Length: 146
Image (cartoon, rainbow, N blue to C red; front, side):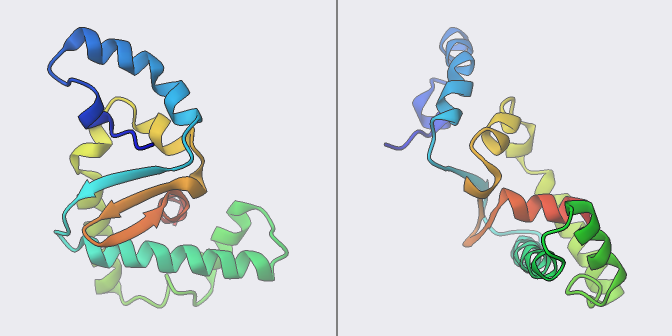
């Protein structure tokens, strides 16, 4: 079964929308996964989506080599070593942060139940799609920590 809230809820009917919003917690908790559409590829979104996936892979590699130490510890290693993140040129770091800023300004982030969609289902089962790129919530989390 597929639930697409924008299609399944009459967005023009305030009463229906309010009623359905109260059910969102149960809907998201029972979901197998969430697929979140951020929109078409634009404003260097392909670049930042690819970088987020790379950074998460680097995080996982470092985490394994550190015997799965704390999240903060692994991030500190990433930032202090010549990791995939630090190997970016200053201009590419600027490019990445500009692209991330523009990605986070997209309409989905302003929706009322963003927190439920992104957290109740589980970080590894929440997938963001932008153009033809995909990253899970953990990729975003790692990027936010960086």
